[in-house]
Structure formats: C-alpha cells, structure tokens
Image 1 (cartoon, rainbow, N blue to C red):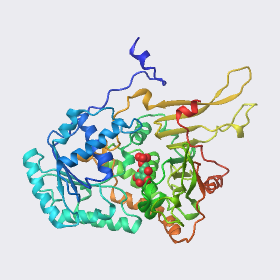
Image 2: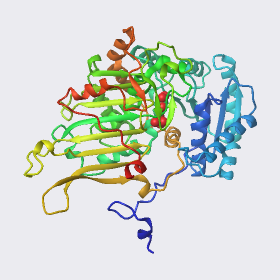
Image 3: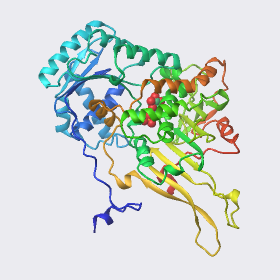
Image 4: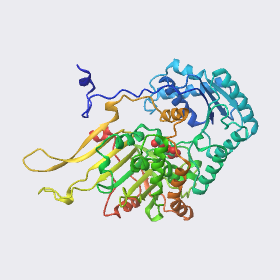
Length: 530
Ligand code: BG6
C-alpha cells in the first residue's frame, strides 16, 4: 500500500510539508520565580522538557528555580518529574506525553539548580547574582538570563524593582529578558502603573508580556491561513462578511480558584487578553513582514480602531447548579472561597465594533463562560447571503449562510459550510462542510502550549508577546463595562444553569441586531457523528 493510501487524509492535498528546521537557541540561563507553583510544574517545565526532547534547548543552558519553599535542587527536580509522570498516566492530558524520554529529562534536570528565598527581600537578589555568576562559569551561559515571573501578579513590580536595584536587569554582560504572565493589571489605571514601573527598570525589548493563547498552534495558524493564501483575504472585509462570532466556552468551573476569581471575574480573566488576541489575529490588516515590529504595528492600528464597549453592549452571567458532561455540579455561589451573594460573573457576552475601512458595520460578538455545555474555542465568520438565489424550492430568506469556522480547541481545524444540490430529480439545496482537521495531516506533538513561547523568548523574538500599548488599549476597551459592573449593587445571579449555553440575555444581545443568533457551541466530532 502506498504511503498516500495509508494516511487517508480527508482533504485535497496528499502530503504534508516537513516540520520547520528549528535549531537550538544560543546559550542562556533561565530563572523561574515561583518554582514551586502550579504554572511551573504543569506548564513551564513540561514545555522545557518537550523542547529538550526536540533538541531545542540551548546546548549551554541552566534553569534556576526560585521559591520561598525550603528544599534543595534534587527535591525540586523530583517534584517536577512527578508531574511529568502524572501526564504520562493521564491519557486525557493535553500534554500528549506518552512516555518519559529519560535521556532528555536527565539532560534538562542536570542543568537545574534551586535558590530558596523571599522575593520581597533584597538578600535573595544578592544571592541570585552570585548564583548566576557561578552558573555562567559552570554552564557557559554567557551572562544571558531569561527571568520568568511565574508568580502572583501582585509581586510583578516588586520583583522587577529588585532586579533593577541588584543590577540583574543590566545588559553589560549578555542579554537580560523578563517574562511577565497575566494578569497584566486589573484595569486601565493599574495596567498603566505597572507598565510605568516595568519600563523604569527595563527597555521594552527586554519585556515579554505573555498571553498563552498565542502559544496555541491553531491561533498562530490564523495568520498563515489568512496571509499565505490568496483565496480568503479579498473577501475578508465588510463587503462580504456579515458578522463574526468568537466563542471561548469552557466546561470547567473556577477550579479551586475562588479567591482569585472573586477579584477577577470572566471579563478580566479572559477578554482583554485571550479573547482580544483572537480578535487581533482575525481582524488585523496584513503586516508587511512576519517580524515583531510589523505585526505589533498592525495590531496597534486595529486596537486604535476599536471603540470602548458600552455597558448596553455587554451581558454578564453567573452559573447556578446543573449538570456538566454528565456530572452534577454546584453553582458558583456555593464554590469554596466565594461569597454567598457574589456578583462576580462567570460568563460574558459582548458586542464589539471596529471603526476602520475593513470592519465598519460588521459587529464582532464575543462570549466566554465557565460550566458551559461543551468546551469549544472557535472563531466563526458568517458571510453575507448571495445577492440573488434562482431556486424555486429555497427562497432567498431560507438560504443558509456560509460559515467559515476556525476551530481553535479542543477540535483543531477549519471548516467551511456551503450549499450544494441534494442529489435527486428536483433542485433542492443542502448545507455541507469542507473540513480540515489538524490530526488528519500532522501527528500530535507533545505540547503544553508554552514551548514556542519559551523558545521565542530565548531567541529574542517578541512577535507572540504583547507590547505595552497593546495591553493598555485592551483595558481601555473594556473599562466602561468594568466600571458599570463594579458599581452596580446586585446582579440578578445566578442566571444560567451549569451545562447550558449561557444566559438568555446573551441571546437577546445578538438577536437585537436583525434577529441574529449564536451558533450552537460546536459538539465534539464523535458526538456530531453519532
Ligand atoms: C487562563 C484563565 O488564563 O486561561 C482560566 O485564567 C482559563 O480561567 C484558561 O480557564 C483557559 O486557557 P486554555 O488554554 O485552557 O483554554
């Protein structure tokens, strides 16, 4: 049997291109603040391990964990290895780690060291300085250091101040870069303050504001899809697009994060960061090149064109009890560390306008929520109807629309819905799908979503990171809604059942515009095929 027959792809093209020829980056040390935290164990170290498996960590590399916990390097390494073993045992884990590659793990683990200390105290930074000097001598890391702040956001500015005072941010002997996790501020004034403090110590080129959605292959692919094909860009505008719906539906609830969530809510947690990154990918103009500057410029232009969202264009929801994926679950107000009369939203739907030539008059509807019926992140683009339909059996108003759906997760792919003639003697139309699925073409790679992002920090590519003005623009756009929701006393919560598609008010928000409706949250393939 030929190779082509064996692979049985479902699309048209019969061979996939070879993987990119990425090389190990140059020497550096990586310092992880928050070495004992969840982010480090579940994502950062597994991502480093995956890079090690692909020979994509530097030859001269060192990883130093920093945390308050009193432990030594071997205990730290053991706790990290335990987490990798859990991934192997948990077949449903999205890390896709089948078995531990001992050689790769040992190569990484042999470069790991640990410094115990309190990140609010100057002595930690003095010891870290000495430690890094030693590491540079032993591991030949050349004085290059990537600091990763995998810590609670209230410590971001403190750590950066200390790095500055201890001269750890100075680039006299090698580069120094700092990765800052989300949330970057909790509203526009706090994001501005944080940027000011960060930029009083670091230059913008040293700052990597991370949004892990940009680490997803399917999100990066949006640019390839739009700009590597001549087919779509000519129709990617107000002339042919009726509206866009972006959905980030989660089946998980707040997952033991009551304290965090009570201060945050769905709007802050998801919209100015993850959801707006999806908007940017789908709505920005084509950049002149694929370098960070060119892309940041186009994103900045786009954000300038986005009006701030007014409260009448926003709907909030909070889940009550219900059944999610067959399991009975409690309502948000019954979750640990949540107030019994909490006004915090776990769902948000918004209507966004972009005032520019491409998008004027094309609403972008956004929704994201927890404890929804299904997990699905997708961008659905609805095209305008054909101007005239010469079919007797199907009058114009009954013609189903064309949808292009970019499926981000958990199904990864792209589908295009269009009309065909149903076989038979009469001309009757039927909607069908042209469907691309990643897994039909590319074997699943072990990937936790941080591999590319970490690799890019080490090679100094800021394309997938956010510039200072971008985070501020994002907060500016949601600020009127934050203000309104923060000042209203009591919301009518809970207003959607766990396991549903969200509150009825969200349906009303979209129906207001000429009777539009949300697309049903895409069922997973197996369910749809039943
Ligand atoms: C995080 C949010 O940033 O993103 C979580 O704090 C959310 O509330 C998560 O669940 C979603 O990310 P992913 O990659 O699981 O879709």
